[in-house]
Image (tube, rainbow, N blue to C red; front, side, top):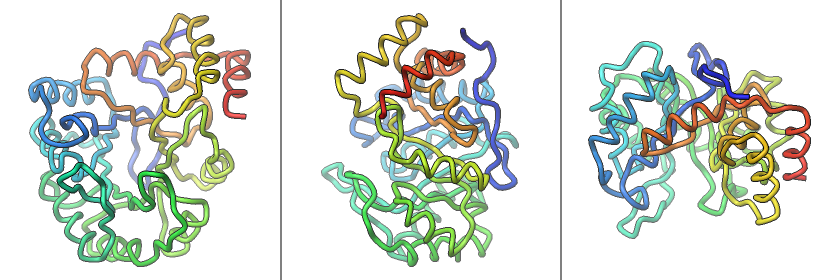
Amino acid sequence: MLSDTLPGDTWPLGELTVSRFGYGAMQLAGPGVMGPPPDRDGALAVLRAVVDLGITHIDTSNAYGPHVTNQLIREALHPYPDALHIVTKVGATRDQQGGWPPARRPDDLRRAVHDNLESLGVERLDLVNLRVGDAQGPQPEALAEPFETLVELQQQGLIRHLGVSNVTVEQVAEAQAIAPIVCVQNMYNLAHRHDDALIDRLAEQGVAYVPFFPLGGFTPLQSSALSAVAERLDATPMSVALAWLLQRSPNILLIPGTSSLAHLRENVTGAGLSLSDEDLGQLGRIGR
């Protein structure tokens, strides 16, 4: 059954309240997340529709483009509505080959924070996630020095709240021993549920968990199981996967991205699916 309201209710990020159903701006950049979008007016229309739909959580990074998505957000939405909160990410940059080399030295992070402030047109960033690891996933590395740099910038009044991204359980604990975090952003979906225990622990602490790649990495067998539930519900597999995430735990926030206005509305409507116990049982076996 479909809901006719924005799915997912809200969740507090510190003193900020955001819609659990958010929007990820990465796909607004050009191919490979490089350069301008092929349809700039369409990208601006999507961002304005995000706000019109009642979404109050936009995820971005100055590395997207680079600079492109932040500039689009500012052009479309500045001055920002009081209820809208923009989350950005630092810790990686772009090279001419389209790679994502790390940029986690103190000077890199200070520059990234100031670049985000300038490109978004704000005096303080609502939330900054420190991205560690690499394209292969989290790596066993210390994050104290880069995280402490962001804490310094927070103390200077440039950042409201901090989070971490692409991290291990140990790195979450390491960050929390230095300063409070309000979210963890990791890869997680029906097929990749390695963070199940972490999600539950963060929920007890009141910390948000923001999954990326909500429909990535399925085997053909797992994809068939998801498609079977979607067919029974007369919905798309993406809709079912998003709805499952919202029902998995109240601290899960979604940031599905799209450059299509129709796809945005489809995501919002689809994520409002109400999954039965039978649906949840069948889906739950995918990641086991």
